[in-house]
Length: 239
Image (cartoon, rainbow, N blue to C red; front, side):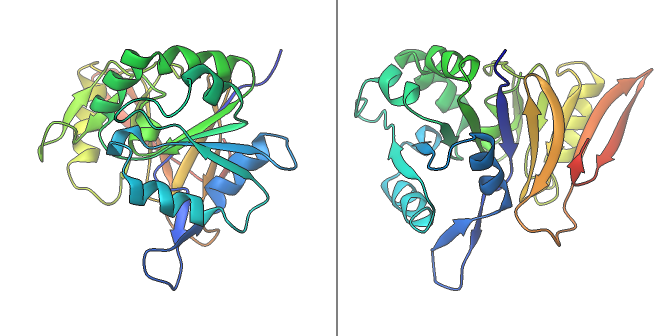
């Protein structure tokens, strides 16, 4: 059986000393490594930002010094190429941030959800940041609907857990995720501080990685035990 990997993150790229220019962080390097390819084919999907052209351009530029072949699948205003073909040819699909609620609606309209599941089951590595992390799970807190965070619980469910992103940098996220786990709106959930990722092998979390090795950021497991939510810090490395 082919191992299936998902890299669910609040990062992936880090800033350089040039304005607006990013470079791959440790999370992206790990995602590329998991493909097992010497020159992986990377497909960017920026649906959650409405296929923002500047976001796509910055992502291409960020990979310019890496030994990869880069492409992107845009859905606005119509798919720029056949969905199954684009996703099926990728070794790594990386999904950008933005509105996870809009992303899910547009993906289902164009059959992207089915194509991604098929690719994952065939060994394509899936990953992403923020909306591109929540989407693989059952759901999680999102700002898709306005400044007050709400829950989205109709995500793809490739991973049978809830998900929290930007756990250390946005004040509403931790208490909302805790309350959602407590009232069982979400199952056991995993959360990431900025520039941290949880890597899943098949459906199980097996590793925590970060964009920089000296970070104090971490990941977390939230589980309801009795009437309380227990939050366990997950250190970098194998879980």
